[in-house]
View 1 (cartoon, rainbow, N blue to C red):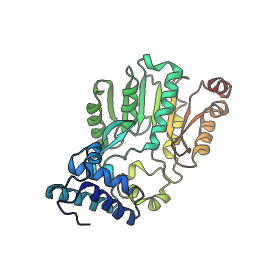
View 2: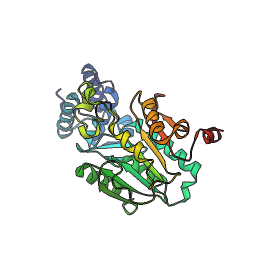
View 3: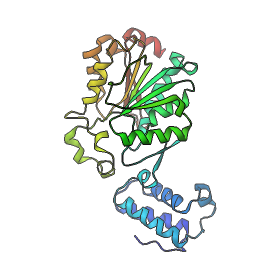
View 4: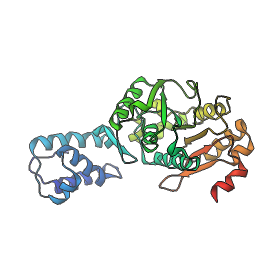
Length: 306
């Protein structure tokens, strides 16, 4: 697509949206607006108020390159190098999973638990397994002002991005990062364990949308033969003596995985704990996360929901 200097911002948004839609990109209009905002350095409000504002030659060249990348199915967040998650800005690089709105369901469920447990005013300890950008842990630390946490990942590059994001959010003093897999680094009391682990079955990765398959790191996608490898490690590990009966575990899950994860909870933690599990749904109404702990049984679940 060729974009010439002098074209108005309203015209170019419309032209880019059409081009992206023709390429099979469902979010063409939104993507076009975000790319024009980034290329011009103008806010959404200014573009709305000044639709006849012309692009300079430099802005047009910059925008043309961005559109080229989007037509190759590179996500907008990766083109811009950032993504807003739960109202906060996070840096995104090729080393990290691109945070998605669905994961905000995990935040909502974790905060619901925090409110019920009275954690808003306590210095609780949070463990985030496979932290990536750090968006889950850093959001919770930002929401729970006295909490502290540790984020783990198997990628040193991802941990560096998480460290940078912690600095941007001003929570560096309350978080530490460790190169590790699943629960390998647990050495002290933990109140809350959270994770958005790899949950795509290995055989399904080739069929993923190209925005995901080509640009999200494989380590953050591949959950093994059935997509449940890391869930097995987390659920079986949740029964270790290092965790108290009050430690909560909240994990994001893929489509249709709820029953399988609950079965794992029953296998490793018992039927009472499994029947007392909580779930959270995403904006589409799909079950997106599962939570459990060892004191929260089927008997207490009814009380919780009253």
